[in-house]
Image (cartoon, rainbow, N blue to C red; front, side, top):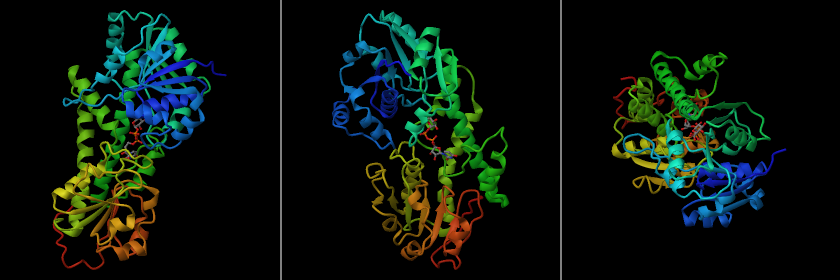
Amino acid sequence: MTESQTMGVFGAGWVGLVTGGCFAELGHHVIVRDVVPDRIAALQAGRLPFHEPDLPEVLARNHERIRYTLDAGELVDADALFVCVQTPPTYSGDADLSFVWSALDDLPRGERRQILVMKSTVPVGTGEKVRAALEARGLTNVGYVSNPEFLAEGTAVRDFMNPDRIVIGAADPQDAAFVEALYSGIETPIVQTDVASAEMIKLAANAFLSTRISFINEIANVCELVGADVESVAQGVGLDHRLGPHFFRAGVGWGGSCFGKDVSALKQLAGNSGYHFQLLAAVIEVNELQKRRVIAKLEKHLGKLRGKTIAVLGLAFKPNTDDLRDAPSLVISSRLLAEGAAVRTWDPVADARERLRGATQCDTVLDAVRDADAAVIVTEWDELRGLASEEVRAAMARPLIIDGRNLLDPGAARRAGFAYEGVGRQSSAFETLPETAEPEERVSS
Ligand code: UGA
């Protein structure tokens, strides 16, 4: 049984609230501190500022053990202080640690032993700097542990409660043991290491996941040229136990607030340390080009896109989240607008009206595809599985589906009368080419 501790959490963002809520679920008392008054007021009123499955239930179920505050002084009696603030990229691609330093400035001054636990993703070497900063502030009662998070949006609560591993980097074995004990109740391998290695594990994991996706996307692009099917290829390769099936789905590229930021941060970190990380430069470039291939695929079927109407279906960077950060949909829609197309978007939860001012966001899929010259699946929402229907075909000006997530069965789409183009699969053209189309640019060029 877990020994109940009191923990403070700096940052009521996505990582902070999942961490706080799940530790409360494990029996601990949690005080979440943020600097934004509206956010704290909303949380105190029981409102969550973003969409994350299961989190509202976890926070509600444990509300007696969770408190929200603007006052860092309330964390003075906490046994552990989790830093869960954002570390966005700067213009140079380095991680911006200003929120981490602000949290340090706000650390309560007390006598008792407290362990500062870094959950935020930070460059390797940050732990050393933080320890020096703690010493400079005379906070000798504060220990330091790196404990990176591996939560994915949309499944964060499940990921926290059933992790593949827990990584604990510490200089002092007692501090490491204390943090490990906070997780008791969760059965999983524990990786105990030094602080720098723990920091590197997080960056390397995200960089490798992104690399796998960019790799399968390049395989998909070659499949299109040589007549192979990437879905079969991924299955056949992924069954090799040394390679595994995960993060091997071809598509319009990876997005979200983590991959782009962390891959750049690792590349930048290597560069700052005198090493040119060539592979990551390619991983990033492949991903940028992958989003833009949608435009060439549309042009292949429709000719020039000026004056055409394109439905962009799915805006969130992946399903089960309303997060638009680094979402491929934004790049694709912006490129379409730049080509002079009319863009009609749909998403069940994400709202892109602010970011895509030139586009029209529709409430239903049917509204988005009405009179459209093509429908592009950008996010694999369940609602889109039935897209190749008679109703949709009748509503569209031209029945063309660009399936950016290989969500549909190509044969079924063709039989339903659609021209279909997936990623790394054989495409099919319009049965009778509409008169106004001027196909000219081939995707393969
Ligand atoms: C990612 C990692 O998966 C988490 O382990 C990590 O903790 C988190 O970043 C973080 O650093 O905080 P997340 O960004 O929420 O999680 O989303 P993912 O599920 O990893 O998806 C990222 C992107 O890759 C999405 O755009 C998704 O559509 C794309 N993807 C994923 C593919 O294109 N193909 C795949 O096979 C898998």
